[in-house]
Image 1 (cartoon, rainbow, N blue to C red):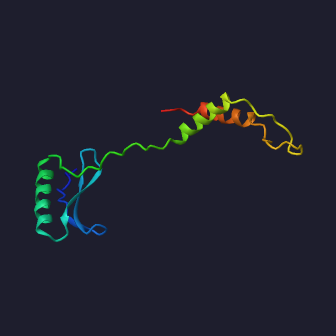
Image 2: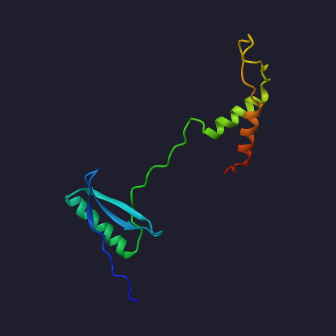
Image 3: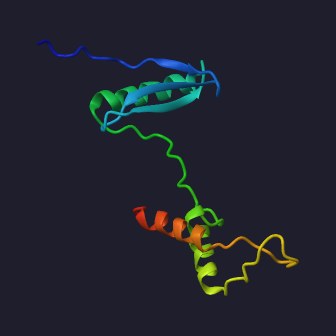
Amino acid sequence: MCPKALHVPKLVLHKPSGKSVVFLRGPDGRRVMVYCGPHGSTEAQRRYREVLAEHLAGRAVATKQKPAATPSPWPTVEQLVAAYLLHAQRSPPRRACSPHSRGQNWTWPRAAGHRALRSRLSRRRWP
């Protein structure tokens, strides 16, 4: 079996941004995009030669890292469901009356729905 031929990555145009980009394989095998600068500029050519030299030498190429996602101030759905279940357990149950009576604050009995939701949440594996 013959060894793989050396693949030299090409400098290509990234149409949405109008920049030159090189696609490399990272150490984990994933494809990495390295932006070199405005397409057709001497800055892009210079950066391409630097990136190519680092890549062929076996060194890691410095790419622009995405900033870490900041946690949202809004609660997650799991937190909302847990808070609702705690509220429902603590609050006294409303008097369940029929929809045909004259009661103004009629609600459906909610115990069955809570049991089903609680059993579904208890079966889920939390991280």
